[in-house]
Length: 184
Length: 349
Image 1: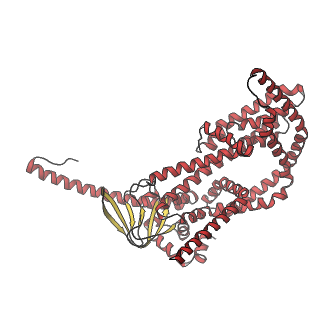
Image 2 (image 1 turned 90 degrees about the horizontal axis):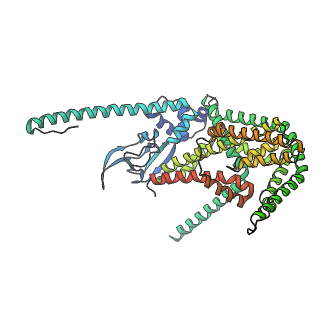
Image 3 (image 1 turned 30 degrees about the vertical axis):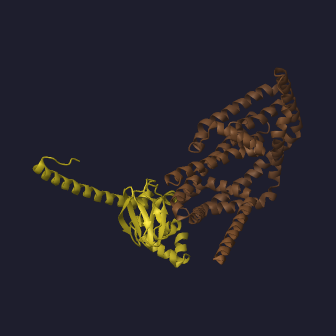
């Protein structure tokens, strides 16, 4: 009998089951079995942030991803010395910061709790431990993250293409008008 | 307002009391704790390997403990009587060895006094006896006692696998509990930091143990094959001495040479040659094969730091101090380096 499955069926309180259900819905953990989800939930860290409390700062090494249990987190990017823009607001049952699971690259933006927010953190060392102890599960998670990165790359490529087309249009229009343009 | 202040003070007093009690308990359990942590670090790769191949982690841990228990019992049954016999004879001959050492050191002392008449040369025998010889004698005297009074160590030995089991099975939950105490601002930094320090420690302890075990086994085997007496005892001394960088090999070599010098005069030269060959062979295998494999990714300390550390360790705690000094300095170095890196990365300093 798989001890983690046994623990899920007969041991953990209702709160744990709710967290497992939350994790199950995320694309990072898709295709994971129930016993694997129990393992993942066991290593995750539940943390409570007050309103305006910083989850992580732009430029700092990333330690892992966060799932919003309840509340909201604003993703902010510094555009000038004293100016920040809000790139996105992450709500309940959504996640952010998953690229830090792959490498300790500096965070590309800051994350700040908009209201009192409860987060579930899944850190890089936790993933490394899973890869070491249960490679099948590790591969599943890494493949899911790769899929996410791929999707984003395709979207970014499309955006670049659209921008290039627009730029070309702008240049040709400008060239006919004044003989100058922008080169890329 | 006053009530809340009293409550706060009461809380901090209580928390300090609890912390003090925990520290005191850890102090009382320091030897089984160190043994458990070392055992857990040594067995972790095997447990992970078993789990990786679909075995239940608990089953792997229990199986390994049973296997180790069986191997230890066999070793005690086979090597124990040999070791008790060897150390008994060694202790019987010890006054002769001490007399020889005194004679050699006195000669060296007289030579030094003649060479440097203006320098106040200390009595070398008194110096060495005070520093190391008494401790070495105490250690060798304790060896047969450890083996024969196995029952006396049983409570300690029983608690070791118990703690090691929980470290192996739920080590990550202990880390998780510790991280839960860290404020949000430092959570990410500590999540990375704790892991880095633990991995470095694991590599260091595993490397040191493997290296010493190899040196001890090779020395014991080599000396026994070439017919030098007390091969097992000298192997154990060499294994423990190997924990001290630079000085370690000499600690293993000295008793072997002393034993040969006190033997029949006709066999001194061939035996010394045999010891030199065994010693050179062990050192070559250790430095070219074992060390790069065992310690390749471990902590690198500057030779000067090692020498100062070992000397200071020897001043503070004798042979035990010398053995413990380098692991402690390495742990401190790794922790400090990693902490400094992350404190800088997270703009805290």
